[in-house]
Length: 205
Image (cartoon, rainbow, N blue to C red; front, side, top):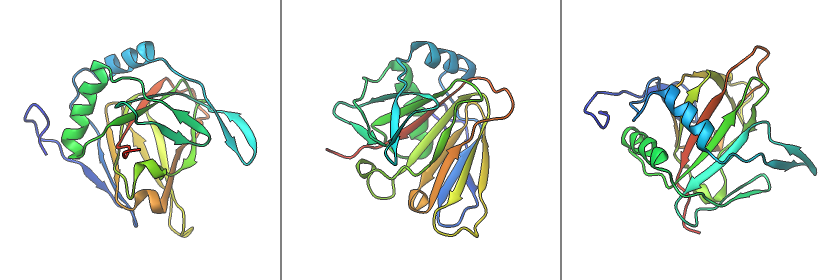
């Protein structure tokens, strides 16, 4: 696959049963990843949401923001997000992602991990509005964090760990959300800021 500038970019398949996951360590982007991290941290209207789990409410251990086409509301874990309008910068990143993913996206969820104390619990991106076997494209900027996959149905299958580099692209397709959960744990060592963008296609509502 060639990027928007004619350079060759190859997604690396990640060997996982019951899943279709691929990784690109360095996505061709409109700006340097360090610049993109700084811009996204400083210009995004971040929200600190709470989620309800088994009747208890917890503050999410990270900040979030939701951008997308008009009307593309996203709901998960008792949170309902109305999309902010696309910025020029997000549109530029979207174009780079769609070119390599050969897929179209109408929304993006931004997660801001401020330091080693921020995390994301195990979950699957399987909400109804994402449709059957969705394609999710994830771009990372900033500190390297480890994304952990664990199989939902077969505990004998070993977990898969992926270190997500700054400027990298991870794509999940097919049966991945049906069969696997993924998450990012807190770190015992100091870690700098990281922003992750997960591009999605929200179905008509």
